[in-house]
Image (cartoon, rainbow, N blue to C red):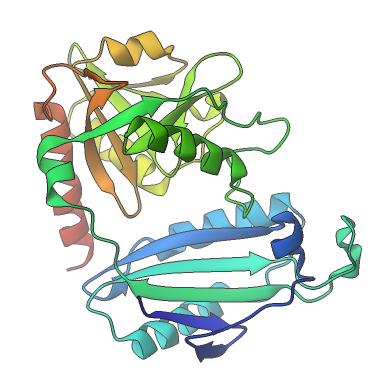
Length: 286
């Protein structure tokens, strides 16, 4: 698969960083993923705000302005010339001494990667996917806050590996208190008695941009929505479930740990939110 890489303003298909970059050594970096529709990055301003929040929490300086990021993303998209693209923006701590102390790193690296858009099988949306509730717990907010989108994703990698062993499409994690949090790269919602439920930010989750849009769309269209702490039994007893993410958009979940959720098919609320979100994307791009 062809990937166009913009490393500190130089575009190529084969870029390299030093093995002494603390992003490589310690996962000391932040990133965002953006999708295009009609060739245009969607919700770029929201992704930039979250990138800067993550960087500020790590005391990591970002050398580009938002305007410079948009310019370099545009240059990289033009170079790739895809019909639709997947964009990953990364800011690493940069090269430093071979120790944990970041004060020796004086020049952050800015990387923009562009490849053809990721397209999930239509079957995932028509029939839904299978999740596994895994034993790997989500990081504590007080240790490595899941609300920060950093380059340290080992927690999620371990969860995904456990899900793979069960044949599930993705993993769903609990926090240390035993409440639902999120999947490895997406937020989780479920439906019961006409209400939509989703874990609150206090549970230790990433504040997903698609999650935010779905919460707004649901409330604007008269759905009752509750954010809170939910045990896994609440999901097991749900009538519908779905996940949200930048690339996945709104994807139905119809099986959990080998058992159907509801009747094992995408439900009416899920289908309506899928339509509402697609319509919303079309409107904002007009």
